Figure 1 (tube, rainbow over the protein chains, first blue to last red):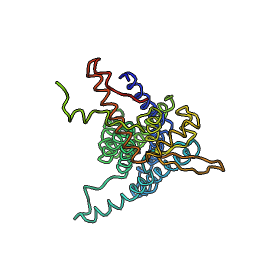
Figure 2: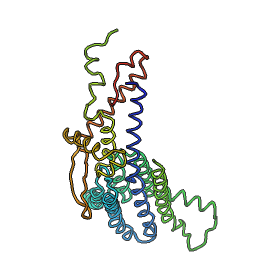
Figure 3: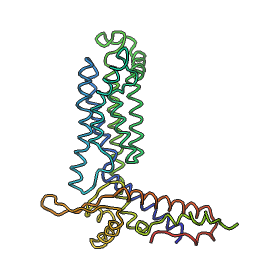
Figure 4: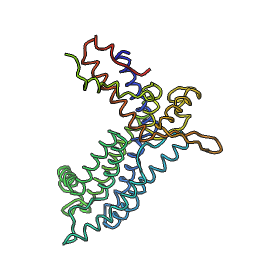
Length: 212
Length: 121
């Protein structure tokens, strides 16, 4: 048969795959749930570190469990599977990571390991692994950008940029917010990260709904 | 210059599998590759097939070990689930690669060479 017909079969097959991916909400649901989790963690970055660590320890794995649960419900309702990948396994990985970090800090002489992974980095890694397993380019790109952004957050690069920007905009900030550095910058950075993930999820949802 | 034995032995058509090559079955495997699992009703709606037609295609795929079919109940209603196997994933990847190679050959060859190819029925 003709090359045109073969091209048609390939195009039709790829279209079916896109439609199935859109039907199962492959990108939007993980991004929206993780985005909401990150956004809700913003207030915990203001103040005590243990509160933020506790939040990361409990809520980050729960986000992946919530994604798995959502897919399970949808599978029962619509007959569409959740694709290849273990959201529950990712949740276990993210929950165990603080223990790995603890072990790493114990084996280093001064208790300060350079190899530990920050909690949001673990979330990005879990999301990236799932995206690669499912060959989902959009999700992989979002996970990679999120990973880099959370690293920049952990290294206070984003915070410094925001701080400099705030100082340019308001040379004499109100006293409660100014003590050399602006206290609410980490909160703002984390909230922006969460909002970005939510926005990426909403864009994905709109694209998924548009696929016919 | 005529092709060597090696070249003819590795012609992309040798990578085509009759069970996978058929257009509907290729579509079924592509959908299942994405969802891992789907029920009979969803596949029927998505591919616009009749019960009998879908059942026959699924039987062919199941006989080749490309999919697993299981039956269960949801809210007292019988439900048939189809799940792609690792063999099915590999067969789909091989088929898509063979088709793309063939298409690439068609595009690079002159019009006279285009009679030698094949495409899903």
